[in-house]
Length: 169
Ligand code: FES
Ligand code: FES
Image (cartoon, rainbow, N blue to C red; front, top):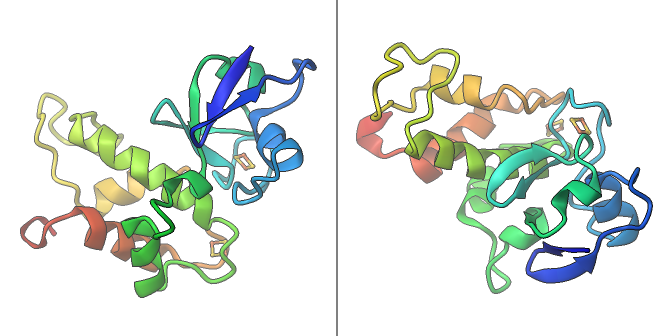
């Protein structure tokens, strides 16, 4: 049994109780993914599983068997920061930085959900496939990722700058 982590094949732990978060941090030294609450409440541990955002603290490593995991380290392309990482720097999207990897992984998947026309809890027209990514939409879709430093405005600005055209703001 094996999974792929940032393009590398990794054996699934023999102990089925190991969470994906602990596999990443404790066994693979991929410490970019953070352990905040370890109970699904903060979003700090968010990674991409086959492109979908998941809470790695609530995901067993064995559940990722045969699947592809991307962590914050895997978003770097040829040594260069992902455009959203760069935007977080430019828009003061963090203070302590502890929530930041989860925020960025979550936003990368969130934008794909939005592009696929998936509604959120605040979407007015559920039949629409052209949902505008307003600030209310964006904040709702990112509401599973908490920032204790209060950098939410910078986080929203970074996501908007990266993915939302001027005309759609
Ligand atoms: Fe996973 Fe908080 S550490 S949601
Ligand atoms: Fe500190 Fe978000 S930057 S918790």
